[in-house]
Image (cartoon, rainbow, N blue to C red; front, side, top):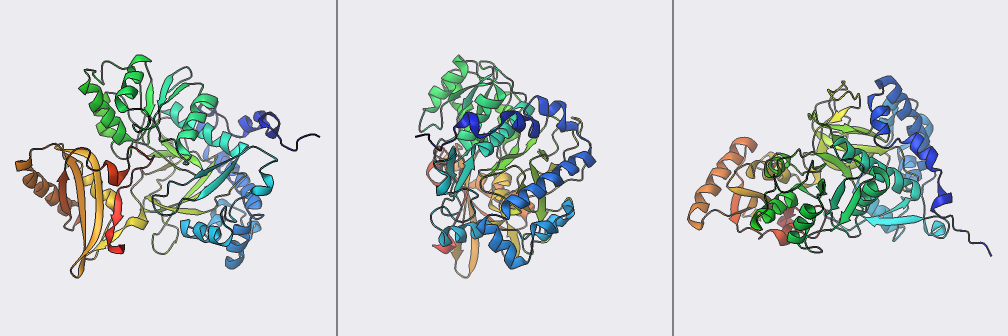
Length: 464
């Protein structure tokens, strides 16, 4: 009896996929420089298709029905704002209504034996991990987008590249590997984190096999540079590293100084892969607009914000055939820049670098404070490492916030250094923040930086 399963070779038409979403380098020779009107026409066509797909998913039928919205209401890109946004809280409710997969998936258990599917889970840094089912099309386009970001940073076919992302239930490491191997034509060496392959061994592999890059968070790249120096290797002279494509997590300048090569930022999340990436001209992140529509909304009201104003990132993914993302308020903070032709030649609009998360905002004495902003200011001091952890707690009748920072300064100098960093925080953020200097490595547990793809930087002890 013939199996109902469609295997990889007959599940999707790869020629159609490549026409719809050109990989690098073809993408940068064509769509990258597309004129704005043609680009927006393409977005609108794909948006209408995605809305039609989403209208068949229970989650959207319920969400849109409550808002009296229909896919047919969108006739222009500007009409997308009529669709109700949703957050992770809505996804959690969906899982409660239809455990364990939720009703936000476009495929489900009935499809498991019919087509290749993969499930990955959110990192769970802000709550219970959430499943995402990916069709083969979704996996391939997501990997292709990752390869575009790597190519934009200067990585090329034939490069040996260490993949040091944390291999787990999360999408990041697998997406990177698929992008390197299947779409960039690079040769990945999969090491995962220092918990899987000791950091000293990863450094040795990078040197011995002349790796052109290492894919991991910026903090770990700085740690690797320190380990390299400790075993007699100069990060700037004894390696073949050409660039780091990011995301650097706000420490790109420090990574660049440590390794002597460009370090870039990027933005994405587990459901959709790379949304935007930095080009050599810098000045923000180019959104891959053939695959996404990005909006910025007010943190409190959800209203669309003008260009240049800081707010929540709302993403509509245009390529997904499994779980759809239509106006997903990811609650990451950024801003959109006016569309203009970049020095690199692209018309694809830019967004600002990741500015933190709105759902970790703490109001201290009338001032909105984001932990990521605290960490960014605190770690500018050259006497401390980039490793920090912020916690909020209730002291007496008011809320307080403290930042812990790893440092190697002598014990008798710590109080003075902490005081100076505290003064800088107060000057830049307008409110007093407590500062604690801790030993190097002391924050590995709280942040989980060696065991998970995205370090945890904040704990709200007020809820304990």
